[in-house]
Structure formats: C-alpha cells, structure tokens
Length: 93
Image (cartoon, rainbow, N blue to C red):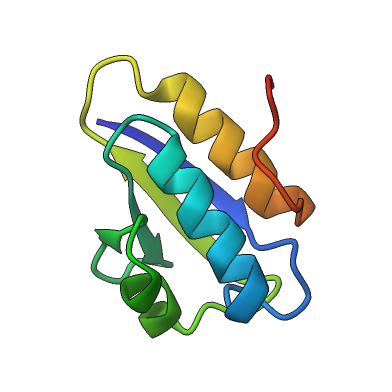
C-alpha cells in the first residue's frame, strides 16, 4: 500500500472550499484514495461528507493512502496540493 503523510497547507484546514478542491482532485486522480487524520480511521477521499467529518485543521497531519498498484504519482500530486494549499491539482510533481 502506498502512503503519504502531509501537513495541511490551507490555514482553514479541510473545510468548505479547500475540502471541495481536495475531494474533486481525489476523485479526478483515477485511483481510489483514502485519507485519515493522524492515526485515525481512513475515509474515502472522494466523499465531501467523509472529508469534512475528519475535522482536519490547518497544520495538522493527514495520511493519504491507496492500495492500487501505480498510485504513487496520484498520491504525490494530492500531497503537493494539500501541503501547498493549492486551488487545483498540479499537472506534475
């Protein structure tokens, strides 16, 4: 299983607009991605309700994971999006 640990770069955390950006990017990644806050239980990263339910704040660590072969690039791009607080998924890492 591929995994990335990353600190949330959006000051407001994964709430409202940043959560929407993240969920759309996770859905567009083409692989099933899970996200967990710290060592908590992972949830579907493509589910707005699940991501909002994490209550992840700016500066907190989240864990992105996928058990699909070849998911490393997708996780790298999502990690960059979260760490840098970007408005859209980067084309390449």
